[in-house]
Length: 87
Image (cartoon, rainbow, N blue to C red; front, side, top):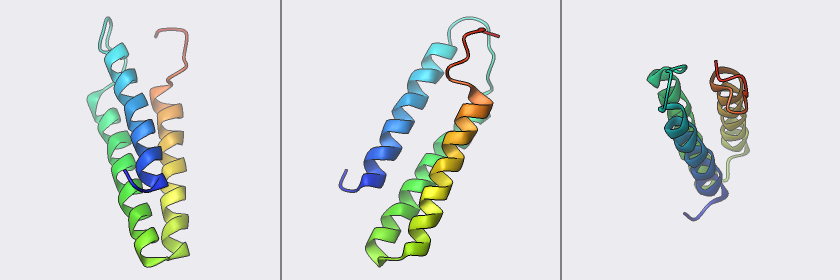
């Protein structure tokens, strides 16, 4: 827990865990593979971001931020964490 990438991906992953635990109660509406994709997005974002810091490579920073945004977009569109309809 040394870099901003560590902190940001852990926060997103913790939110993903809470969402999974909430959705595991009642009628299933998500598939486990959807959470796996989001978790892998967090892990790869963290890895690329930490490598960018080590190498001082702006291209890696751009890739890490881009993948992080894509992971958040995937969570928003596919998992719909703030959907109140419950369906």
